Length: 111
Length: 117
Image (cartoon, rainbow over all chains, first blue to last red; front, side):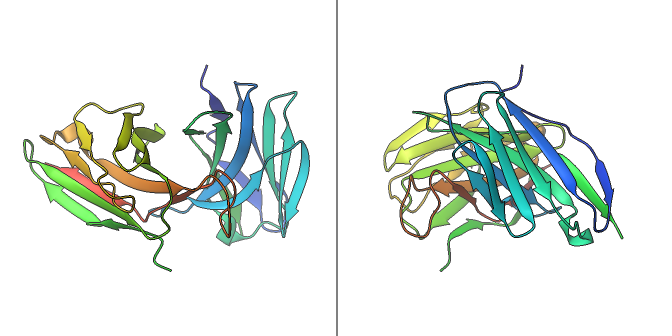
């Protein structure tokens, strides 16, 4: 089992809809959780970080963390065509040096 | 605020040649990382460094060498390039916490697209 799992997609949503991206991780000793956005041909850029259970909102983005279920999600409200990208989930485990990345979910927002 | 820079941005080389990819960060972050990204594999960690003169292997280190004599630089060398090393290479850095940087967050350079013929 991979340490960080994401549905590869593509996930296609119409403009203005809510896009829901999901991620599961395998190790309970986890500390920090991140969502990165990566446009084609570009490097990953951080859009959200979350460190405790619950929801965290930043503009149109909401990250949700449930450590008991080992689940982290990203909601994008009022999706725009400019949100079309690959979204990488990442987890850093307590005491570890490394951040583990999922393979990413491709999102397409149709105008 | 230059952040992380990588050079060259694009490189074409031939099988068997030695290639060095450069990574420079201006934030004095302790941790630095090298990843390669290939279709179907996502980001795979090649090497990482916790501080100057401290490096360790990641997931796919074979065929690569790193050094870190200064905190700000973390070059990656392909000793004898092979076609399987054709990829996009990303350098990243991380500060544990503090200031404008979010805790445990990695920041990525723009990447180097390497083609080995």
